[in-house]
Image (tube, rainbow, N blue to C red; front, side):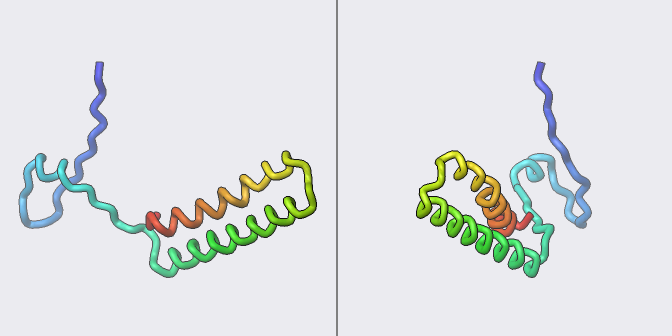
Length: 89
């Protein structure tokens, strides 16, 4: 048994299109403004720099390897900010 999860939206334009045309094009509309994208990109870059400084400090002081696992959270926050800015979401 297969389930087809297709969503079709009504065409609001004056041209009528066939279902074949609707299936072919992928449309991505940005849902954040350019100013918000700059803020998220700046956050991602600053968070990445902070994470690198902490990593260098942990390496320089010879801290136990397991403490570096905590850097997953700041690095993931940096990646999230960067990818949200790049994908405009």
